[in-house]
Image (cartoon, rainbow, N blue to C red; front, side, top):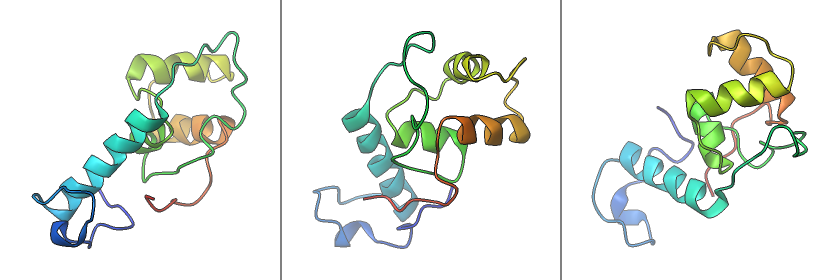
Length: 112
C-alpha cells in the first residue's frame, strides 16, 4: 500500500501519533478520514454522482474509506448495481467502472 506521504516519519507528525512505520501512519490517517467523513448511502434514494470526489486512493478500498464509505464487498456490490454494473465481483475492470461512475478523481489525491 503506497500513500503520497508514506516517507514521512512518525516523529515528524504533529497529531500525537508517535509510533509505527510510515505505512502504518498513513493507514491511521486514512482511518481518521473515514471516521470524519463517515456516511451511509442509500443507492435507491441518494444521488451517486460525485460520491467519491474528495479522495482517490491507490485502490477502491482506500478510495471508499477516504470518502467515508464502508468498503465492504456488499456495499461496493450494492453501489455497482445502482450504477448499472451487473454481477459485481470486484474485478479490476469493474472497480475502475465503479470508481468512474461514482465520480472518483482519476489521480491519487494526497492525504490531507
